[in-house]
Length: 373
Ligand SMILES: Cc1ncc(COP(=O)(O)O)c(C=O)c1O
Image 1 (cartoon, rainbow, N blue to C red):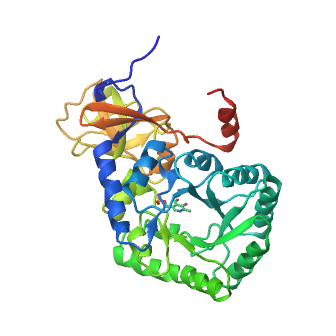
Image 2 (image 1 turned 90 degrees about the vertical axis):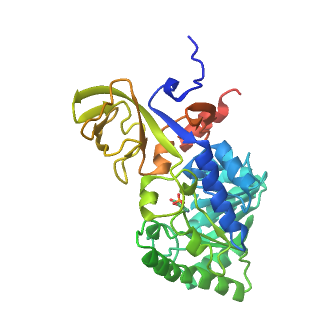
């Protein structure tokens, strides 16, 4: 039995991911306008939404230097949308390096690198595939995740990159991920300025040593307007701004919630409680429980696999079969749970956008690529 595409929100089978097209476009336009002033450019992070139609809208809005990706699978999808891709992540496995090399023959492909082993793996893949892979030396600017230390260690790896066959050094990157959620604006600003000094100083050291460094990449939704105005930073890798989540709303960045998880009330067991069919298999709770959109005083008290339990305000008339809209606390892991966005304009469903790179963990990529078209 075939199911027709819903034309109204109340026909959407739940749980489902919904995007408000007008709000999304306002967020995209607002970010593009900030970067239109230049000289720093925006390189929207594809990992946030994994959705070609959203990336197309980001690129069409202008001020972009290309797209950022986190995985090779994402880059394989993104390369169909844009000819300048930054894989802002360490790629070391031979099979993945070969896929990066294959991409590098189609588009300008740059990846982060923070080790000699990583550099050698990329160089080998480039040689074997007759490709040239761009690299940015990844610096630890305080997050304590990947990255070499700014200064001498970075310079040594950068020099090694210029000596590696098939590798082209484009510059440096340093993601200040630990500062994105800092609530207090002046603290976020001062700590970001301090963290970025190491990045900008290292870029200068590279140039002083005669090494190429045309890209200095950093930033996210929490720091785009701080790092994006620091002299010497050439591009910002923000992703969440387009859709937004409650965590970033709490940070106070000037973007509006543009997506939510739609659920249906399946139980109303008490005057002060209802239960909807959207649990943590349809949205993450890693930053916090989701918020309830549009019902004053209602709060989610727990998320189980398939259930959201919602505390209701006195006098609530919500009943079995009604719809609820939950605003997730974290964009990326929520999107990754869904195959498509229902695109809405008020109560009308105006489109359905595939989340093409969703679940694109590397073992699935091969299976999907081998599937007949
Ligand atoms: C390397 C890197 N750059 C940029 C970002 C910024 O993303 P967002 O704007 O969604 O916080 C992230 C997010 O995790 C990241 O890992």
